[in-house]
Image 1: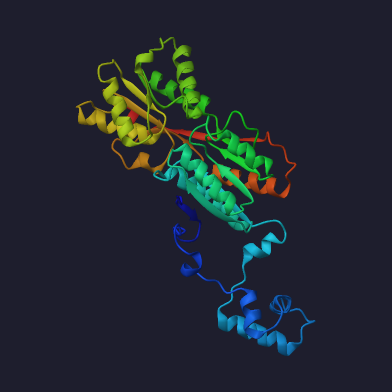
Image 2: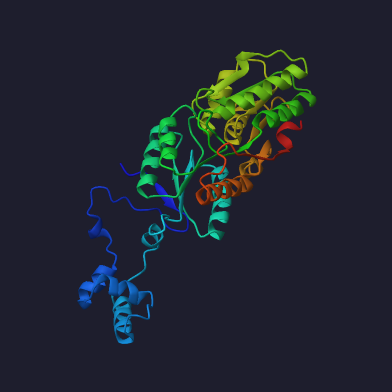
Length: 360
């Protein structure tokens, strides 16, 4: 099976599974030029580089043939001579929200200015697909990988195998806890604490938490921990009946979580992502609950989705573009200097943006 992989700046790579690649696309090589002119490959190579040791007439003849035949130099082959492809692979858990796109923009910004190409693959929150994407990236002979894991317990051995092959790894946002590698993160626990504190200070006492599965997404564990710490700080008893772990992270999962809370006393919801929060908010409105008068709702992602819903959503807004930039800077650093510290950690700041969904 060929996964969907995207090369930034180009169209999606086509699926050639089951086809003869040469029948789909044929590149002219220096061997083709040499065969056409009945000269050696090394003569063609040197002539195309403008080597003065090749007679002027021969150089011009070879260069004219290359132009006529549509020869284009292969930068990958050239870079491989120096042990590099100048290509970085990026694994994201999903491409359906603006969050991943903003991070990718930051990665591309740094890579572009350092002459690196970027190959992007989405795991679609599926560990098996993540593994397949990693395998394909290895076939592309990438120089390093930036990854946001969909499940912090799976594919650990594969990531370690990649490191053993001396391919640098950098993790961002959803990080591993059993792999030593550079990381770019947000302080999920602290920011969750302050957001829940805002809900409490606005008079809410029965605050539900809608989170991703604690066994797969560790960020959800950390945000839940910050949620519990805020309740404890303000003397509010923790109620496990209003903590819902969702199967997915879509709008429908947020709506389903509200259905599970329907018979519980709640006056506020803190959701693991903005997508879950918006799904919850829409369900609340459909069953006649006013947001924020009856139930305040807050999320954690800070995408532009927050401003195109009504009421606009209070959220924690990580600096996603900066997260991508820092991840790219780290991977390029580790490609250039493989002995750089694997324990390096960069913490990106996040802003709490207060909007109408919690201001009632």
